[in-house]
Length: 327
Image (cartoon, rainbow, N blue to C red; front, side, top):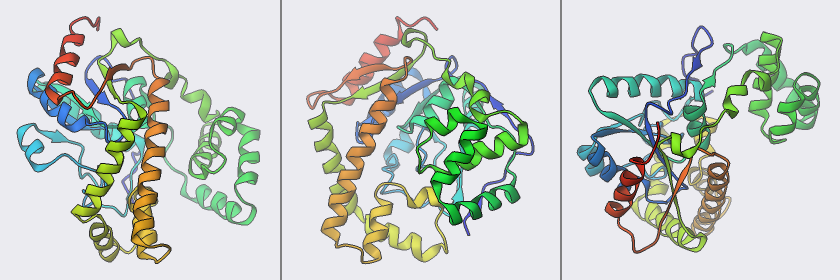
């Protein structure tokens, strides 16, 4: 059974960090880490990870964590927070993010969030209501119903109490459907009505939110190269070591692109060449989803990338653009 990170005793509302921090985002393999180090040096900032997989210890190669040299040159935060057998929520991330950002500001430096997890980004920009603490008995009863009747029955039940959530959530996203049912039961109000602030956006000129944007073909080439490098560095060995060390890796960690496919390879579902092909394909799909999310956020100021550009030139452009912002 996977370990659960300690749940806060009371629900917490996390305010937006938009006016108190900078954000550098973009799809996977966009080159965020190298640009971030240069940008942080220019603006006297410390870097906070905005990556839902980099919070796990011992998951280094498959998450493309910043290098030792990058971490030595600029302080990095929100990496390696929990063990791979631990579940970690958006609320838990935001609690750590607000504490770290405040400590950075107390040191007279600027918090610079860097990463590509869209849900974490949106929660930082719009604020987030964590809702009531979990009701584990209720969750277990719903999970038993799910096993007996399937996700469609779960969706129909949610439709009765929170039709908006039932419409917007993916039919197979049973975890969030269960949470929506739980919130409706505990508060008497639909979860969708309690996250209205989650849709309150800012204009790009009123926020320091920058996204690196590549042509589709160049980004695919970068993804393929990164995946090849991950396997060459020992991704298979990393995943095998995790499996040997932990009785059960958390559901979130096992679904991470790269880890999911290698676990299947270790189970002899397919050979290594097929695993590499699948990781590349699934990473391209992940990048497309990230790009779709970013295009939906008015806060984002896109930075056009090309193979000829250096990290220094990109950081310089972002820094110059920041001077025209009205924060």
